[in-house]
Length: 126
Image 1 (cartoon, one colour):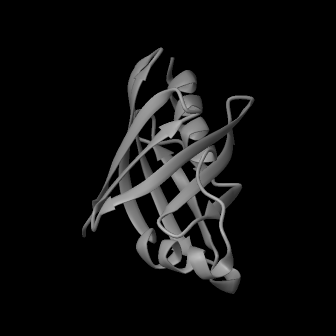
Image 2 (cartoon, rainbow, N blue to C red):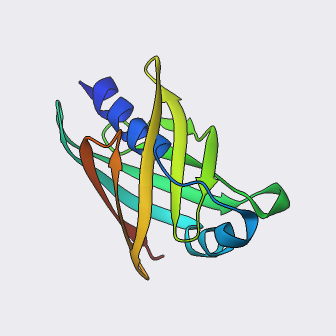
């Protein structure tokens, strides 16, 4: 069950945005930091994770995902950046997963996992 939950979280990350470099600039400025993300209505119930985004080489986003249930951390394979959204791609439990996240306000995002499950996130402010 834990693996399925993590898989679904990964899938939601995979379905996030494409864009040009100019459009992606706001995403690079908005998304860095830690986010508490919940995937709603998965077959194993709601799944919670921490997504940690940071600026990498060439001002591109990179990061990790930590499953809150078992503290397993997975490296994000790729992040596609749009003006106010991202698509997070990663591999978990034998599946390629994508999660779409879109800016809602200064500290909230909403999106979906594979277009089937709702996703919501809140910025973790230290």
